[in-house]
Image (cartoon, rainbow, N blue to C red):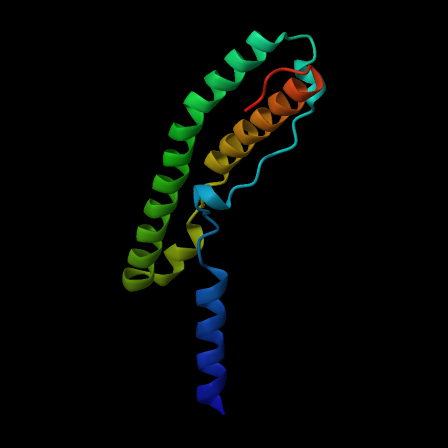
Length: 120
């Protein structure tokens, strides 16, 4: 009975201390209103989208790198000093930046459709 409780506590600790870091592919777009782009013409919309797309790849890499580093820290913490695993921060800041970029692209696409731009 005592052994079962000990095992249950260890599993609970392991599960609760796991990193909250996500992969780039798991980050959803944040809501960005398309109305913020309503004063742009089609060329300006496409230019804005390309500028954001050029940053998106770097943001995806940053999210994945941060997650990878977090997972390494988590493994080291569990092997060397378990309480340190509770101090792992995750990659929330990188996730937020990527979600915002994805949301901006969605908003630009919506506005381009409303403006009847030739959207591919």
